[in-house]
Length: 549
Image (cartoon, rainbow, N blue to C red; front, side):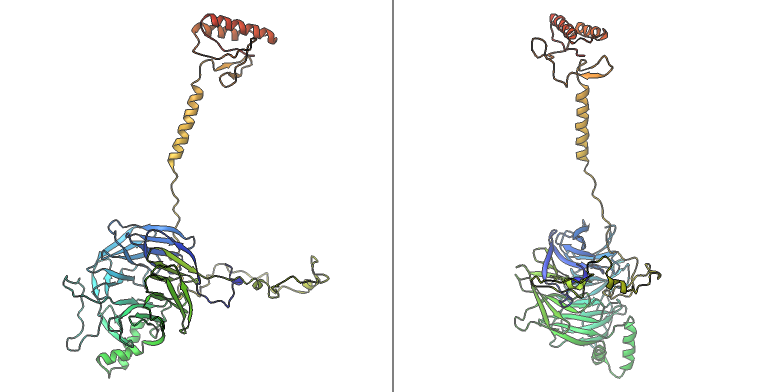
């Protein structure tokens, strides 16, 4: 769709289902940073990479050691790596271009979500949120894990000890905890079961700040906007909250150190709350005050202007869209299938949702074309009107155009080497190493059809060469005459002559002598000679072929 003919007054959010993708039973999805590739984890352990421009499968990552459902997929910053977590407690790092498995790590608990470190092009660290244990930092190269604190330690017990080993089998039941990296990957934000947001320095495994949530409900989801300016939480009290991130600079740890120095008079929990109030401030709250429904997979739009959340009710596929001011602007109603995952395209107003049946629905905008954008003086008419043209309107060079002069300097050099930064991308760098598309792999030709063609042609050649010695003869003018392919001539009596069996040696000699003798131009004489040869052949017990001029 051309940008000039789009009505600018329409909301920049999707409205209708444009298409759906189908391949196995897909469970979770994730876009790469540019939105050109879509990764989907399936229930059979495979990861499908869709080319979102052509809506075709670009790559299929198959792991022979994994045959269970995929729980999450995550792209690296430049799109060369994909991290896949599965229900068999495994974390697998893939090379996207080659389709080869780089590393595979097995945890003690099933990871519900896993996120790669966002600050590296080839990350080796990831943040995993297991089902029955605290979030952990996993080194994919060595397999070591670092457990993160999920609550404020008691002053009497001291700080939470570091744990770089795996949990024992006797771990008590644990409420799943949501966690995510910030934009630059130097801090981890954890939402615990007490309704608190903890800001953690994962290198030293210390809680640097704490932000309590009103009501103290369990936090189920926590996610940053693309530009890192806003933080979203989804709680058990059926409310989506938006916080403004005040640690927006790259040096978040340095800012926390400065805050600690200015608040030396405080200690313990009060100090953490005071620091947290200077890190996050509540911005908006979203909820359905009528139905009081729970929300599924909430997230931001690519530019951070919209917030979406899926209905967690069974048997309905509804997506709610709010603007950042808190107004509900659209409710998208899909098929009667439960919604399990959501993703907003990083650039375009497109939402992709996953249903319980394994289909991926693509929601896009229903555009209304504004053709008056091509000409400012264009006016749409509801009915025909009589038009009176000017005197020189249809001249080749109207006088009104002769007066106008072009303001474009044709001598200026055009810069074709400088890249303009796309305002839709929040990242300041435009890396040339980024993987946006996968190369197409041509399918091999089918050799079976070629072999059949060769066999049929060889049979045809053999059938042409397997004729009798009398099938081809050299005529008097040096050309070969094929009697087998031409219809036999009739003799004077009108009977059709056909070759019944192989001629004898005497008949062949007579035929050869007849060919060597000079033929006269009289057609009647040739018929008499042919008849005599046939009579002689009949005397030898066979019927011979005619010899024509």
